[in-house]
Length: 301
Image 1 (cartoon, rainbow, N blue to C red):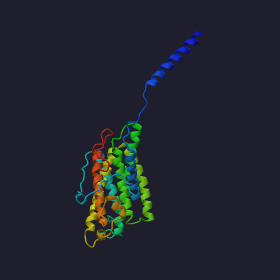
Image 2 (image 1 turned 90 degrees about the vertical axis):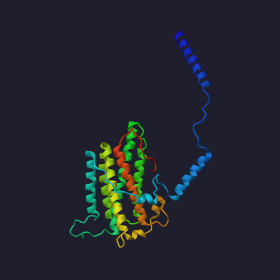
Image 3 (image 1 turned 120 degrees about the vertical axis):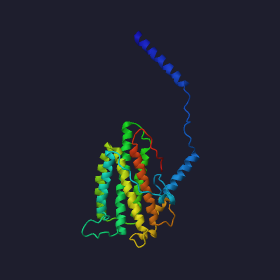
Image 4 (image 1 turned 180 degrees about the horizontal axis):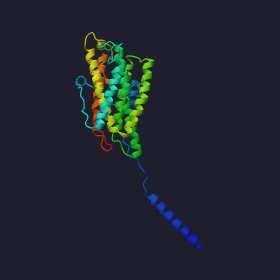
């Protein structure tokens, strides 16, 4: 009985002591939030205006006239086995794509040296952009999951990769305003996407650096293709000379901040500059692939 009495007394004393400690703690006051109601209202108005204008896109570069003209065709020489594999993979992919799109005439029923029609050019671009939009999204997903399971920061890589994926998708949406694909074309895109997503996902899990090198080489080829299309369009009497007078789709005018009277060739110039940008970014990421080093490219770069 004495034991129970002493035990109860100790519990009561401890409770009284803790209560006195709690009473000494001052009431919490919010002091870490700087957003005022007026600032919050202004932010909401900006967001509402964005939705009203239909501008849901992520930050992205907007080019000047001089920048879109200053695009160089370059090639990074492979420095190791991974680079050589990446280069061989893209060159093989391009060879098959050139044949499939009619860019390269190899079959007996094809007229040697015959130029591509406008429809063939747009089909080639559409298919190219459906492929180009895959790597950035897959890479961002891998980086996101890696950050979660390692419980470490990504240091800004994810936003750059997502911006790249969206930029390529905007290319696709732009050219869809110029020409609608056929059922057969859509079927080919679906099959190619399943295969490419699966292959790139597995490869990125084991060899992310090689994957970024693959994208760098892919963008090198994209710059070549768009440069060729520009040179062809500028030739009077060519199949796509009409691009100099055909109005640019509204979606492209809003996205690249083009003038209201911009033509389709202006869009091609902007797209080519985007591809050059992706080329340089992915080669840079492949050169210095590390989870610990910050992404050198800020949002919208």
